[in-house]
Length: 144
Image 1 (tube, rainbow, N blue to C red):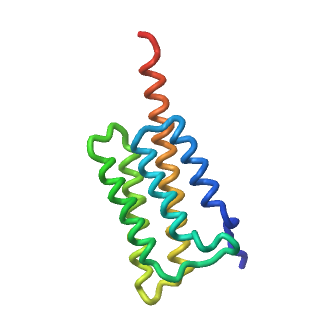
Image 2 (cartoon, rainbow, N blue to C red; image 1 turned 120 degrees about the vertical axis):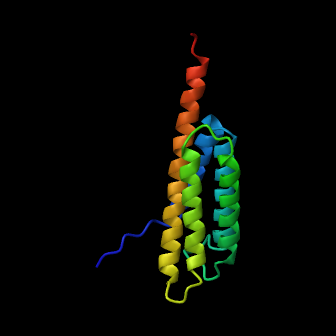
């Protein structure tokens, strides 16, 4: 059996590249959600720069994923596009995955894998938001 393992640091590359795109072409919603995601990366892996490690204490992730969900819920209010609903759904799934880490039969490998997937999906939803925001701005700036 061969397991697919993401290289260490790939989460940072995805988060920073998405943040650069959001700073350039996104709106405040995209920037707020990605700022919370970068905070999550710094808090959970701040002490793991030298070697890959599996976090054994889930409370910091629960708190920061709760913050991401709260920011997503604040962004849903009066949102003009659907990507925010998708980002909120993925934020909720990330929080549920973190809470599942307290179930004795859930291994840290399963918990961390699930939260990585949901954080990537939040990034995909935000990229969708960056793309639609840039298109809307371009459409608004064209002469009638």
